[in-house]
Image (tube, rainbow, N blue to C red):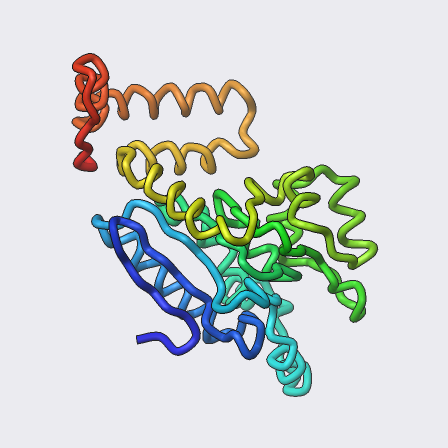
Length: 264
């Protein structure tokens, strides 16, 4: 069904693989369109509770935008200078899709994540990286700037650390990425798959309704005044507490057994 990605489901976990290893899994417009289609499948499939996003091979998770495609766009005089074109563009649609997924998504970094690839990883809820992976925003080295991914990185990284990435264009280690907030966990390469699988299984065992309502609330309160945040969260808590999953979870806790969540 897809030419630039793979989409597989097993044990309530969807695995989405960027599959252009010869191009270091660079983001083409086609890949972005296929990712967005996969995201819609993910949202619609009640049998999936968590997703893992990764890249084919061990060289690169994603090298960012396909610069060849960018060059072609420049040569053709294409522009996204107006608001309508910007909102219709592939990068805009991709990065604004993550908060609307409705399900947790884990980035598995077995290869380097740079430029838009780093933004793609940072847009995920959790990032698990092999200990020999590097991260960076090298756009400044070719006269550009990490415009699109700043919106994502700035939500994860303190300003002084972000500016260091942007100004220098140098790569940092996965461990350094964890220290500044870009990476959740760093594990030895040999343990990467086991840790990602363990984390995905743990999340998949939770209430899918609780995960979705909680994740949606996380993004909904962003930027709101404290009073509005608390009011929204209280309303969400009252509604969530009335669900069958919440009742099952509390009953199972009191009975000393594992809950059987149905997503209702």
